[in-house]
Image (tube, rainbow, N blue to C red; front, top):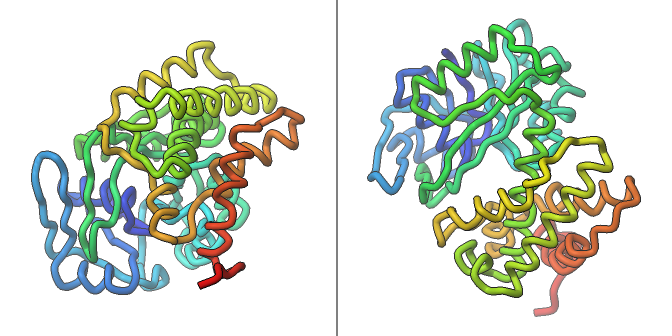
Amino acid sequence: MRVVVYGTGGAGGYFGAQLALSGEQVIFVARGEHLKALRVNGLRLETPKGDTVICPVEATDDPATVTSADVVLVGVKAWQVPDAAQALRPFVGGSTYAVPLQNGVEAASQLSAVLGADHVIGGMCGTLSWIAGPGYIRSVGGNNFIRFGELDNRRSERVERLHGVFTKAEVSVDVPSNIVKASWDKFLMVTPFGGVGAIARAPIGVTRSVPETRQLLEKCLEEVVAVARARRIEMSTAAIADTMKFYDGLPPGGTTSLQRDIVDGKPSELEYWNGAVVRFGREAQVPTPTHAHIYDCLLPQELHARGKIAFPS
């Protein structure tokens, strides 16, 4: 299968590497020093099992130069999806389709608005991976998974084929019976993890152990479940307990891309994580005070990172 990884960050780099190692033809879209390193040294992937270098790799900063593709894995940040959709328009046509890997629950609809619903399937992933240096992806292990499915939940030939490709690559892969619900299940997991970790400046091993931050995690989960149900998304009665159990099983040093970006002073996905919970809650008239507090506390840093406000020197 010919796979384009649009955005070779933690998620795109990790899953793209697994596909390349299994023999698929992968084209990595990156930029700057990251792209230069990919072209010269290949892609280095560090996992708890050791280091692997994939060399040579096909890499570009211009998706318009890609002559054909079966599937595009969209690995950019959530706030970059609208621009990515426009950049993908020249070659996403015919039988080519896109799979969003973003956190949040809005990427599929944003891609569909530009590319057409027939050229998009719903998707999400989970991985504690990030860019550790140019051409270098580090993964700390944990539960790396990818899930996808048609937006109308039918089991199509293209979904079955993609499932087979990831199975061959020995990636944990699933086609949920309801991709929208599955997206919300992931949203439930990531927003408290990221938001609490960001304001506490601490990894999951700390936030789940300190009673006060553990309580914040639980309150955040309660609010997401309430918002989801108000939007007629079916949530398990055990969703909160199951998610806390999942947190307890994560590597203690685990952090999210949201908190890493905030700590590094970079633009983050705050608007699509905790900000989205607040926005959805307001629309459904569901109180979300914990997420609102997290969002409000992190917003000055976010505005500063985007150059919209200046901090005194």
